[in-house]
Image (spheres, rainbow, N blue to C red):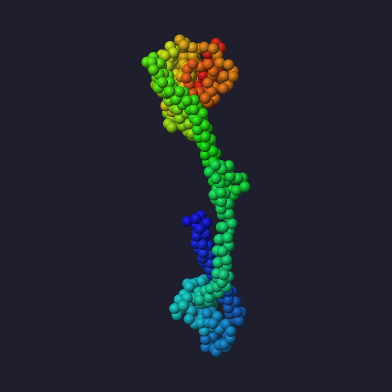
Length: 446
């Protein structure tokens, strides 16, 4: 069911219910007002009768009106619903109309009382004179009061019934107009193409729609960023894989055309090295793509630095042995310890492995690469000449490798390390060591 139909259904149900409640409230209010009006008139009538009796006294003729002929006039039914009777202190009827003779004598004081007389409901007011000489009672059939209330409500019921359909039609129109921004938004999204991810105008939208539009705009931004990353990854992979594939093809042709064993062995070694470089490049590309798409850490916990350092250095050890590089791990003096950071240990291993791999790959052969832990930071440094300001500025640029490098690489290690640091709220800074030589990488809180 659509939102518009659901809202209309709720209104079509709620409006008549509210209308009936208002009608019931009007009925009870009108009944209360009518009762107050007639009760006041009964009190006034009994007081007037008391005053007349006090001034005139009991006349000679005390016959009840029921014994007198009553002319037929308009409003005769209303007269039949009224009653008046007077008793003396001995309980004898002094004055009574035709209906008053039916009222019972009450000896327990004055006030209102509801009675059933001849299977009809009456409301009677008793008033005792100050000297106790007279007891006056005035009564009214409650049917007259209800008839008046029904007449008042009936006179209002017809306009209400006539206006109810108009009200429902007006509510349907109002709902349609109120949901017009939703239809406009739906039409706008329906007309958009797959690549049209520009933000929706949220400032001019109704307040209720703004959170939805802001969430959709955020979604569009994330989708656009994801598409940009995918396009960049595709372009980078196509660009970077073209050369290794061409080299592998040439090495295969060389191996296929080799005649001597020495030439064939040399071609096979070159082909194996090319395949390893290709595998490393693909692995780095896929890892960087996954990291850039990540919105948070897969897992978070307290970092076990000795285990992390052992794994990272073990992964770099074959390269260090080949290049005769000594790997040192420096720990702070007790009672101080390494940084107490939380993070994903697997990603931190990748970060340190990339830093150590770069430091080992580009350090002079036979030198030392150090991994140092301090209270609030980590350091990775190597020996050799310091990097120029231009090279330091371009560190982390994808697929950028300084010219004249003998070691293979993809130029993605620094980008991967920086992305992992960002996910952990850390920063990487590159510079020369304290003595002005080599390269030092510092990992610290951002």
